[in-house]
Image 1: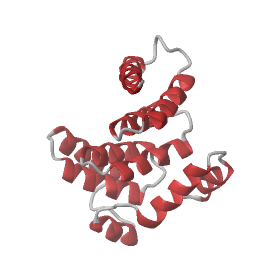
Image 2 (image 1 turned 135 degrees about the vertical axis):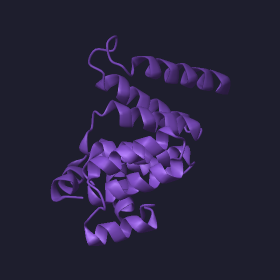
Image 3 (image 1 turned 30 degrees about the vertical axis):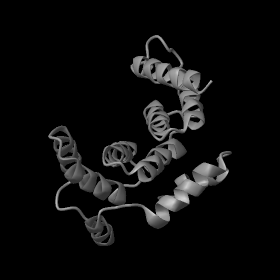
Image 4 (image 1 turned 45 degrees about the vertical axis):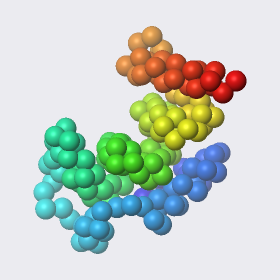
Length: 172
């Protein structure tokens, strides 16, 4: 994590993001080999090759391998949004909700209007039964969409809010 990212987190008005960032730094669930790669500051292949292999593994249903590769990528290049997104999605698929939450928050800390990360945070909150947090992230998504009829996430957001509405209606 570079100084600019830390400074942005320190200036962020949401103290939960800062707390989550420091938790990621202190106890992120990286694959054991990722630490070795970080210490050696090298990859056996260039990062584009590793990124492609991570996507291929995910597409083939090999989530464990994809997660390992994404953990290596976020370790050697912690400021790359797409690596954190892939890592968060893999962690979510493995049921590591807290670690997935942290990965998506890392994206939001550097890209405050990232619809993909906010959508995944809303979906993750909904899956965990935290309807209030899911609604809050969903509202942030909607506020970040400048043209809601043209944005590619609009159908997914509409579906998520339909689920939220029915969940809240069931609580009444």
